[in-house]
Length: 112
Length: 115
Image 1 (spheres, rainbow over the protein chains, first blue to last red):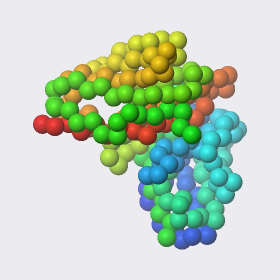
Image 2 (cartoon, rainbow over the protein chains, first blue to last red; image 1 turned 30 degrees about the horizontal axis):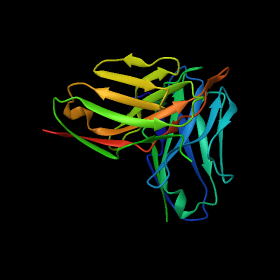
Image 3 (tube, each protein chain N blue to C red; image 1 turned 90 degrees about the vertical axis):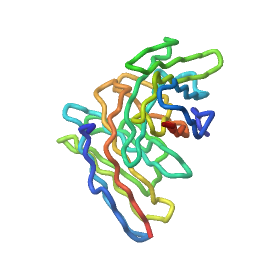
């Protein structure tokens, strides 16, 4: 158990819809990262938050957004969903300046 | 395109043998090179990292080698056990003042342990 929790575990929704994925980092970790894992794109970094502020952006679509709240939990919002957004979405956390990231169990999103 | 990649999608080894998983990278500006293990149905798990100014680092049953001349990273697992069956990813990361940036992952090698 990494100490990172993600909800829900599974999510099935239709094209055009909007969903919110939730992540609670390990106690004491200020950085939260979101990753997408799919068969064709592999594991891709989406976005990073550090102590409530956006710190780095990766291959995140404009239809996707995230935020980190004062209690350090984070939410990833995916809107106008397309079939190609079906993937595993992982949240990870780390201490300040750490290269070691702790991954949650993931949320499997299926868009039908 | 990808800044890190792996040579083999699948590697099959006998239980008890040593395993070597290889990775090529292209971004020399990364600060750390890292190996992650992902078991079926789980998130990636950190194994070991190596700072860009080092060439070897050892952990428990694992050794990571970094050859900056040819931009090559390898993970050696000693005395492979059934629990080592997983997909192994190399990754790279840049670290700056406010913390570490996102990981850039390679495609992964599936390590299969034969009894």
